[in-house]
Length: 336
Image (cartoon, rainbow, N blue to C red):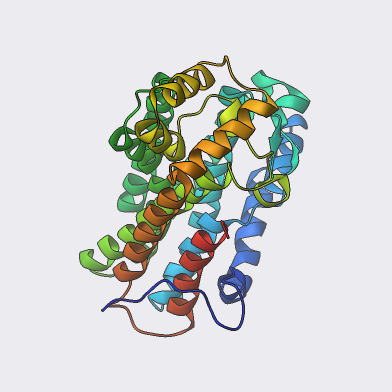
């Protein structure tokens, strides 16, 4: 059974159906997050709260809740596990911003800019620790294995990306390997653990893992594309941030591979930090357009989005499934 990504006729795709679907559960997740980010050291809740309350969609914990709803799970274990998922995500964001030297996150100043790199790293470590406390309290070794493995894979993806930094020869295969680890692994784990707590068969775990993984890849590919076609209001960061940081994303990989010798020299200089001005970014935009690099990045995002939708095809129809399908459509439609 398959479904097709399409633009909805009456309105653009939205996360609202998923938000409405899990609203009651999300209140419990938010309560767990608020409780577990507390500390007698005032800087910890202050810094963590800056990012946690910073306007993020909480998509990863919502995927845990929506997946549980898809399976008809009626318990409460998924609430604290969804909080654990959000803590893992938030910790990685704190660490990412330090590594990248970022100044803006979701339209706000980053924690490392306000409190400094050491505090951001240490509070990220605190949130990782809280996430593992929540996993242990759940009592399932299988859940612990899934989420701890995802945490390790995310760290490996970060190191892989670091070692590939400012390398114009980064190929598409290695790039997909990086985003599969950095982004998709947590999407996949967030969905899969719902099948564990609902005590569903292995094939349903695998299906939800595939849904989350493919959605995560599509989500990241769209982020890569709209760095060249969007603005801070859409992205929560300035257009061209990836370009100015010398990040080799899929639009760059494709434009470099398809460009002339002169174009390749430009991309090499840009990635290595010698061409990062406004005029250089304008030229980069012209190159990714001329080579259809953004169009093809988005085409790949739609491909992975379709795979996500196909993965949950066998599950029963209903509000949960509809919301999860539309979440994929939303992830892809952000670029338009």
